Length: 171
Image (cartoon, rainbow, N blue to C red; front, side, top):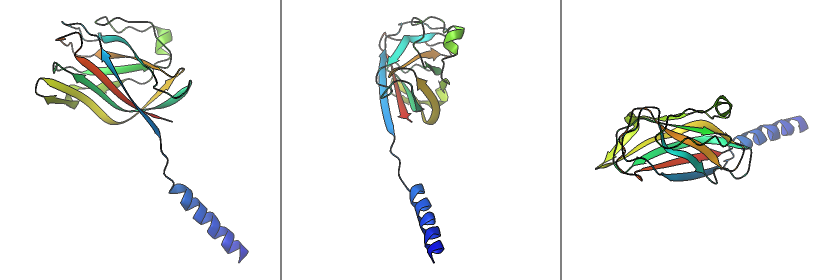
């Protein structure tokens, strides 16, 4: 009888553990990018180095990007890619070619593509969103550093028409 009770307790304990709800720390961060009013070439950085302060609660943490949204006040049709780094890379200016060093590439997290097929148009504005992601990110600090890269060659309408929004689920 004691063996049966022990087995029942183990089974009940296992099913209880599986049913527990785990709440994760999700952080939604945004950056208003200062951009060039004019033409970009495919492969150019949009807005220069992006520093997302407060991306992680402490240094040397990791998580998953679950959402990326590029909001364009001018509604430009462009494919974008967001590449982040676990350590601060050298500054690449807005409208310059994305060309990190080999050392920087070794600290790069997986890049996330936001294509025009993910674009929603609202009048003269647009939002290129990718949700439901689980793209690994890591940082040596509480900040996340990255670059938004133009993959098709946009024509910037003003110096403040791009906002980047990222949601990170902390592990």
